[in-house]
Image (cartoon, rainbow, N blue to C red):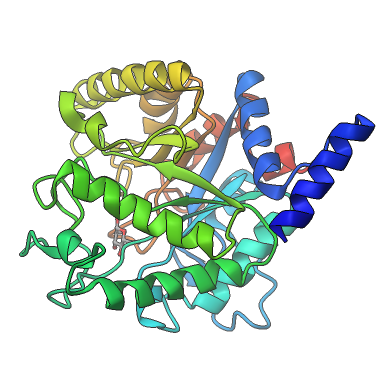
Length: 353
Ligand code: BMA
């Protein structure tokens, strides 16, 4: 296969034509184009799978046309995110109870409709059997690296993740593993492994997927906001990352504190990415349950507009105690609609062609 590609590339050089773009190059190109046009794509986690007061019951027959975002704004998100947590066990459903069959179908529907897809992954703790948030041992990363006692088992976990991505076929997706590692709440986070171990963990996963022929992945690395000077030390490198992301949630009514931290981090990351010629995204954001009904246009939008971001992803709408995007019944819905009506913010219908 590789020889064939090389031959095609050489033949194209000889005849002066450019080789056709791969799905991966198309996705990177698409994101670069929208940034160059001063636009930013809107993304929502689990958008087609469930919302405030509904969930897809029978995914095999469901047309997957429901979406809280569409119900509020009349348009689907340009990008949809899903999480692969529990794929490592060969489970039928992810850690949040979303069937992997539904995730596959929804991801392909989103791409078929002209949209984009991103995956995160919250794998369990292989030493304790606890979840991704189990930080009771600082030996987990070490144990799964080559030479570690859990390495072989971990490679089986990676294989299951790789098999799922491969099952999507020849489409490009954004993959964002080992996220928020600047914090200490995941077993791969700060204080739980060394800088070298984190980078080795990144490389172990990426090299495995590439060796399996998964060359359509656009790789995203995303620390958490409130970054410290040494947080960039774990950046895997320009040859390993396409999108530098930031995860940023407002946690209290103090807008000023939130926006100050967000601006500080985005300024630094955008400058770093400009020099490195990488894309930048707000890979997760939100204000849980939206206690402030004008948060979208008063707090979030004025900040993200200042930066050359390719997308911003709002986290999931699990239930009335844990949601981030509106539904028609929530009081922030009019303000959200106003935000996404702005021409700068791209929804699915804006990027379909
Ligand atoms: C978190 C919460 C959890 C969820 C996890 C993975 O931020 O939404 O309830 O299990 O993401 O989706």
